[in-house]
Length: 159
Image (cartoon, rainbow, N blue to C red):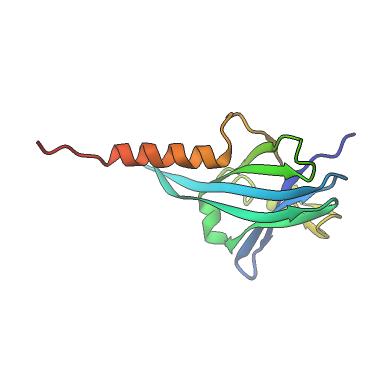
């Protein structure tokens, strides 16, 4: 079976913190990982978006990992999503564009039953599938598009 990049959720209930890892169990090297992330929740009949931001995670070596997020477990009350751009060492190759999400309560309600030992990060936690992103936009293009949409929502003409 071919090894693929995946995410992992590590929750320390006693400390009240969690971490989301991006795990590379392959021989591929990436010179740059960029993450675009956000979170939202539903309130009655509305969807409320908490925030969106992009961050550079640096390089991702073979058989290694980067921490995408380290926060309090309260944040797991939100639906958290990630878009990832992975730039290969070989600059002639295109970026790998990936996505995954943590639906609210999906992993916390059955956390212990979902855990397995992940040797790359040396922790017992659930692995989360990461798939190819459905959008053709790169992260920087999506951020520009998001800003244009938000700007157009708040433009008022009082004439």
